[in-house]
Image (cartoon, rainbow, N blue to C red; front, side, top):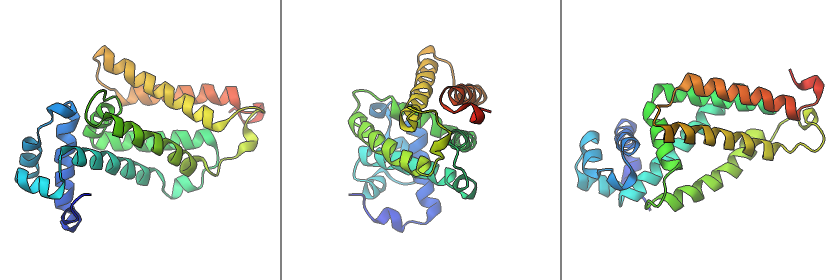
Length: 208
């Protein structure tokens, strides 16, 4: 379990360590990410880094979980709680995520490396965490949606998964092509998918 001394640090110092880890992990595969470099960027010794986190894997998984919590906190605000339309919720959450990624580009690179990690020391644990997050986040985000708008036989959870698979496929295509992620392009594509999906699964009077 992570050393509780980390929680005792001032918030600014905690953030410095997390930002340093995120930057190094975002630029390198897990096995190549240097804890020496993380410590140097955080302005602490490597020994102190491992005093707060027992090993590199613990630090990595903490950052991954931390980012998931930060993203969730950014999305679920007063405006979000007023929404009951499935597709408005999708767009609202996407807009919030894009706004956050604009402020910190390391989040995108770190998240993509983590999500698509394969045969790394953290790969299986990341996959298990993603599986847990998907179910819990769906109920948090879509637990109060207006089901009456859907056509008979349309299943919101399966639609949500289809949209996520499309987003994953888009991200994968960008990665294997060697192109950099363009947030404006990605957001425009996502909004087009949402509009198409709305027309497919909503009753006619709710398709606009």
